[in-house]
Image (cartoon, rainbow, N blue to C red; front, side):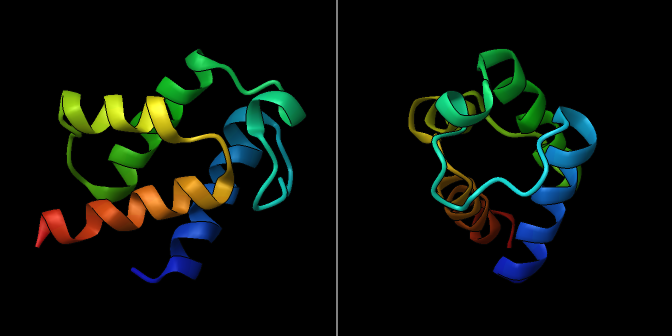
Length: 85
């Protein structure tokens, strides 16, 4: 899965699940779009579905602690890809 593929899927999730259309790649999702911790948990479930496996508690904690922008989400999902190989 390429970064563009991941971005398209994540943007679809944001639009369909959170009603956030086309967030900027470096927008602070919390400040610019009201994205909260409940939304982040739901996003992680969607990422699990997209990748086809369940994330460990450590992976989820890393996501919750470090992700604030779409670029950071894309980096995070890309970092998970080698772990599935």
